[in-house]
Image 1: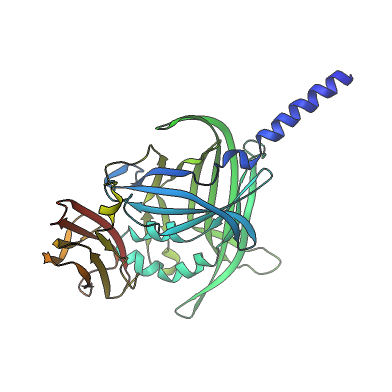
Image 2: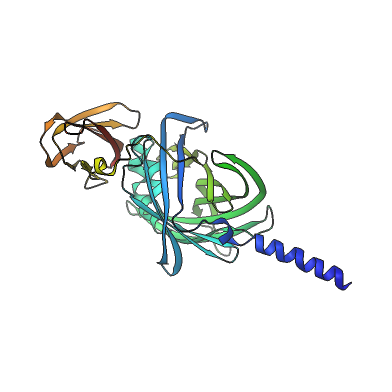
Length: 368
């Protein structure tokens, strides 16, 4: 009997240890490289809309009440992502068998911006609402029983649009699925697999004591694979329908997103001195209406071009296409004749001194 108890204790101890959230997060200084694909309404990859994302686990310090890993992040094209500065920070807090993420609006805004301008205009009032949901969310419970749903957060609120009060409910749940072996570019991992479902619902208010009835406006189902010592190695958010018919604004499809870990992106120039022969700043203001400033610096004389394209790759305008001497410059992009949406500005520089050619693409958001 005593022997059986000892064996059971050992088994439970091993299982408990294997569920520790810190086992799944790498050491500080770790870098991730991801391929990010935008998905159409049928959840097929849009070939011309593939981006690359670099993350770096920079340091550990307190953030909004929790000790958190600060993960610097940047997104760009295959040829430019290494040259770009980090533009975003994500936060992860680990305690026991629980993994927290700080919920932010940035990815939601990016997906919203990819759809047509009419929806972008209609959805703007909701962005501040989504921003109000920001905070620490316990998304990953590593010791959770398989296929058992758990509540992450839920609360009711009201937004006012054109003097119309709209009662809403924000709800977020998680579910741990069966562990899965996942083959990636950097190896095969035995992953913890989670599904995180986020929904915004319109509340139909009934006479007391009847509870309100939630009518879904948008539901996002996020599937995440987490590998030991690597954290997230794959993440899929299918395309989602957003129903605004109750406001007579129709319904729309939000593109999906697939993020997969890959080997380090190469092909960008690695010479440190050459990297600093130019600098392209993020446009300001951003978002903007109707104009925005783009500043850049070139350390040597050379040929500079700045072209603006829409999300389909169509050229909108050429802002600069000329030879310039070294110095600081600024140009204005005026979108008064364009519809709301995401636009990309591409800076190309041919350095007369070194003979090298450089190219950087950044995105900007026009909201009217």
